[in-house]
Image 1 (cartoon, rainbow, N blue to C red):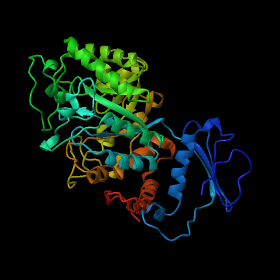
Image 2 (cartoon, rainbow, N blue to C red):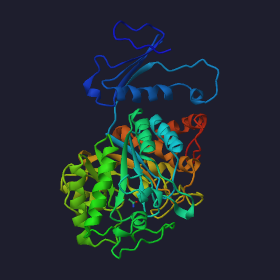
Image 3 (cartoon, rainbow, N blue to C red):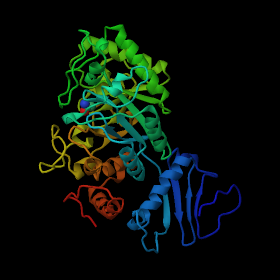
Length: 435
Ligand code: ACM
């Protein structure tokens, strides 16, 4: 039974959650946990801190509590004191729902697993060459036509605005901010296939179900393009309670360099005019950035150029943080263009030392992208994300000074029974001493 009290002292034998007299030094997400033989007391300054602390309590209790069937107690928890807060404010993962589409139910299940590991940003890659996955009322064909297929030619799909808002609210209740991405000016074939008037030659191409990149571009010199961009950004801003809109900006090889720079400047102004801060992949640093803009590092040193303009950086190095990369040559799913990423590699990197000229204070946080060219089911998502996403969560939360693969692999091994109890289809890496 839970009771909401506004006064009085807690009785022993309870788990007591409080924000009364919470220490502001704990910040938005920090918490203190005192476990004595009588009582568990969880204190935080903000509700988000209580929520993060509850995940710690769940992880301190025996793994069977995560089971969906009734399990015998007793539920023992070690006594002690914990004072805990994150190193970075941005601890995210990205899911590509464009190459393959995933249902609202699948996405919610994934969000629950993110919450368990204190991830606080869920970046949704909502459009790409192969599919447009969010209904835009002013341009309805984007979803109905542009969302009608996916890689390999399957049925695809899209979220209605009500469904999308349902995901956003579900995440918010777990103190996770959804960051929507509409990828432009490249990766736009699904949009070009949906509206003839967006194409230079006035002809809409057929839909695309392959996996090439870098062949599509919005026509940046056409006013119709800018009406489209403004409408899409406007509707996405209205659907987004958080401050950020991600505009992609990656791999725009079919856009000329001059057009690209023009595009970034103009779309940044549009995002701002709709009351949001722009996020984009590191290529955006080739344009003129505002200090409020955020660049997402993935494989070059362009992040330095972004920092020189005052922007902050999300660290997502493809060679360590990409969850769609194979663990090793035997992994049945995934890609291998930046090499392989085993569980140790996914843990053993530091966001403050990735790019020369980009240091701790420039880094907003970390994010692990999961591209879905080869992934078709929730089982596939879980197999690639777990356990590597736990390493990313650890990098984002814990101080760099305490980092130790030797200790981490033992802790991770203890999560095996938890992941099993949660029903997660995780990769049992031979590098980890699973319990
Ligand atoms: C990317 O992997 N194209 C950001």
